[in-house]
Length: 356
Image (cartoon, rainbow, N blue to C red; front, side, top):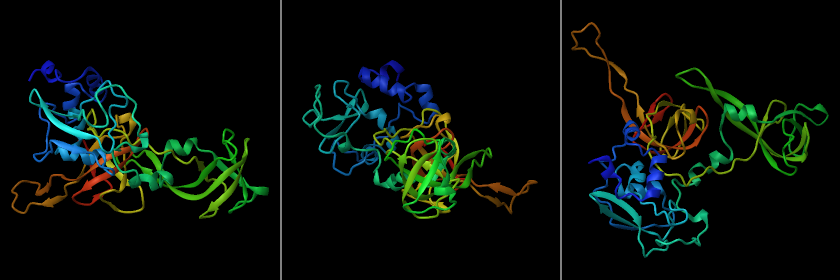
């Protein structure tokens, strides 16, 4: 099929969106997407009513054997506000246009093919993944990127120069002169280094939550009162603002360019990772990763002895085997956090990740 024929059915706004996420065919093929072969599930429904509790990943999997192909079939209506958003009660209809699948909102559903403002709040929109799966990790992170640590205010002393402070005590922080009075901050102890196993670079550190403190007086140093503490608080600890929830209305899709990296560690202390765990990978914004990008994880093939070999070397490395799929949820410069969507076997530090 010629390239100009492929795009005949796509609305102009849809073309712009697809180009933004990697619509160029050469780039798409490099990233592992072949738009001439869209993997529609053999049992894909012709109509589906969106249910409360659905996620975009789940819905994608109902229609596609490879859910990251969602942008290839979703019809973006340029006349509807927030055309990418889907809400409970919407009816999705699978049709075929020029031999290619297209998924759109049924005209009779709540979102019509005419300009209007939806009455549902944005928070009711279907998200790519369930927020509760990463809520605890985001609200009190256990892994800190190096750029977060370098930019963070730090505690220098307690009242009257005390080295150890606890709930109700006053502490002082440098580089917090812009902190708003009354604002709450999380107090963290930077822990074990997180090293890129491929380059040896420092990517970040495991973060150990120590306390929550409230700013009582602005300045440099700023004064804070410790509201609660789970461990001793003193000089050398850093302050982090409570993180806003990362955007979860992104679209599951394959990276636009080839990505080759490894799992560095789990976001929580554990040696193996499985479904719904958050992992750290050594690829980030500088490598083209964005929230919503889907990657496959692989168990690296081990080396075994070939007793029947007549060659000089009797060692052979077995091929890598796919172990699961990850979705990137938060991106820093040189590393990202990804949620394990599914896993057929354990995932461990050092396992390769690449385009699905």
